[in-house]
Figure: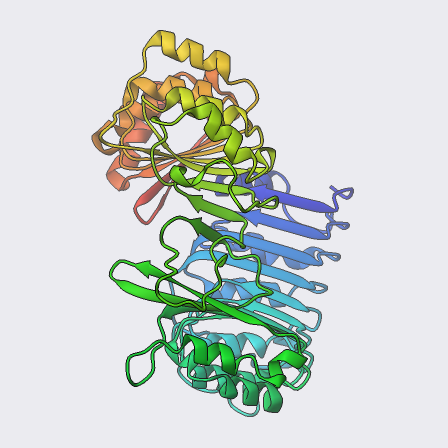
Length: 508
């Protein structure tokens, strides 16, 4: 234990078992970095509170599905004696009540310099968090939905905060300006993704905010996504905005902006952004890029970003004009059983580097099976796979087809599989054979067939010795039924089932 410098643990069942055997104490005297993937905060608070015994823990990352004890997480973090970096991501904060500000100096962290988290949605909680971190230099957070009050003057806020990243700011520009007026005096880096239309009233308001409250700012990364901005006569303000954001103030600082439009349902939406923001999460290659809305938009807006590309197969053609060597995630949004799979793969390989792909989302049915196998063989490093089983094409595969398929697949590294839609029970063994290194399987919309599905999967684990986790829809009644089946038929010796809202997780 005293040799471990970095430790990463995943899944609540294994985290709990690990610390039952190896409780946190000074034996981990060299541990500097700790990562919890899917920690059950509400059940394992004692694990967090015990981290105070780690004398060299500089970095802590926590990823959890749901948390009722928001304050306990941060309170435990702020007590760690030497922590410098903390990242807390939670899929759902159960409590929306802001916790109190730091009552005294001994409640504050005097070492934390970097703090990143995905919530909570109240701006009040952000102010209160900052009162616990007077030495903070970098702050990253997102999804700010509401604001209640401005902090009192006696609050002790960070005096060296030089970097802020805001993922999704839903409030008005004035509310953002009030926030920056309090925390922005030392800022050198600002990244903001803002949704409210007041963010694009005019460029002058941003210029004044920067001059008066962020005089040290060197990097300004701006991203607006929302309804198309129009003037009083109902005309697009695109050219006006581009002109306003091209004044000497912006040009001297080399802050350059572009924009584009796209249709979402019946409305036209706009994107106005810094051209330096090249790493958007997902770009789309399809007809949603509407060049007819205005002639000033950036023609490669939806093509120049990554790391994920979402595309229709009809766009994968020879002599495609753009290449994406850094893309690691692919999403195909239509069937491909009518295409020539060899030409499709060849054309695709000129757009992305297939061996770089680690995430693949694709449709799946009996007509696509052979094409799917050929395509997956060319992407040996895919680890996360989402199969969209189309209800109109229930996948039925004969024993001969299964055997031939297994012969074809020899080098895929898929670890995490998610199945959307109805998958016939007869194909469970095929799923095991297609992905021999599968560790986690998530199933949606199984309904009454779930018990039989789990029984078949667990009874044939010899085909996949790596599988240790199942996630599926269910309730407390389903938990009892599964436990009865597993115990009576002796399918597993050591396991755990946990409910998360409408989802059940089974580990062994």
